[in-house]
Image 1 (cartoon, rainbow over the protein chains, first blue to last red):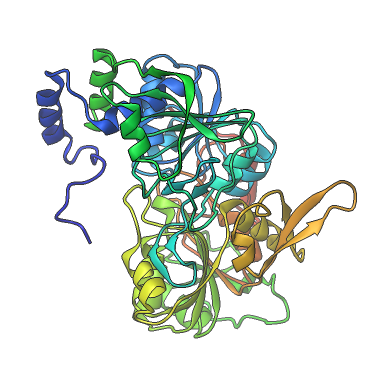
Image 2: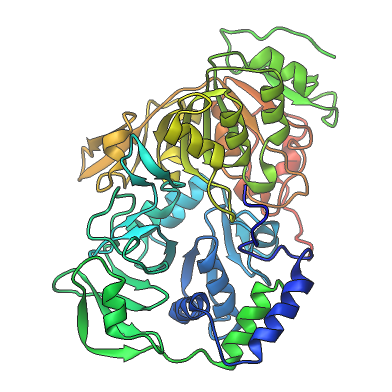
Length: 263
Length: 252
């Protein structure tokens, strides 16, 4: 069951100390991992005072990072029902007690989806994905045929409603030709009616308002456009001027590593 | 220990509500029994069982009891089908899974569920897949004894092709919406252990279930802002006033 592998997230109070030591070794250098720049780029998208619907995992870490840095008044909403959570550490899952403990209030799941999401009270939604296509549609259900899947993934969850009802969505995923595909195996989440931004470990993509297609607007430092194209399975369009994502600042890196260490 | 028989003609009969362990007030209308006896009496082969409760409210003990009692051909309803659903699938208890998300929250995929869907082991698993909003709407409709729930969504996704219980309907006033419906027999809800956390769809599950199992303490213990999150379904008259009393939030 993968118990011999490293945990994806630190377990608070369990392996925090050990990981802190590892992280402090890393943070002495100016190096950062692709996941770190992806998280930091996602954190920069959080606007202060916005109401943000956050999924678990990387978006959740990004939300904690944003709240610690430039967006202290952000309202974080989790699909388990916590509204206005102020987590000091990234939650283990969306129903982590930390989220309910620090929330302004807690609502039921039907209320969350009907009054908050469908009622369009959410400014930004942050999603993960397994596959994304050139129009920003997302698959998180199956790889392969639905009836006879090669890999069965968790499925839709709250994502379709988040994408449908938020004013803006940010999709965060690692970029390979297997994740940035020409044709989705399954359409789980149709693209947002509003603004869509995709952040990968190679660059940032935004929706072209005319063609409704994703175009590369920014490459992360030391990543070339050619490399992004290589990792994209469709003929990628780029903005007229492809910028470079600003380097992670030492403050961003140290706060992020502190969060990941459960400190 | 009370042993009154459930009256099948009155689904709302208080005798259908079972508390396990002993915490509930003796004046609570309901039946005190052990979890094992509750499962023996209320969960039969071929039943549809909704087991709701998120993260720390997951009804693990009830799921494990169902596995121990070797119940078969169950239809399991669970919004976030997580580890307990995975174990029940892996032990061959579940024939059909109605879910909206199947994963180990924060950790990854469900390996027994994948094995059942991808390889048909230990038994082939039929799935009925929704999204959270859809399944939550279905539960709300069910609790209100309506034939279906209505929501925006689904239309533009591939789920519609594979989920027979979802149908587009046209709004008689404006545009297009969606319906989903289903029925089930038994609801098991998780325990509010430390009066924190979310109540997920527990209220709706409880209102929908013809037979409800819930652990003791769910009756009196509320999480903060309880009046927003969790109303009783009219089975506990003595405790009910306390639910409406606003609670002072204590830090920490």
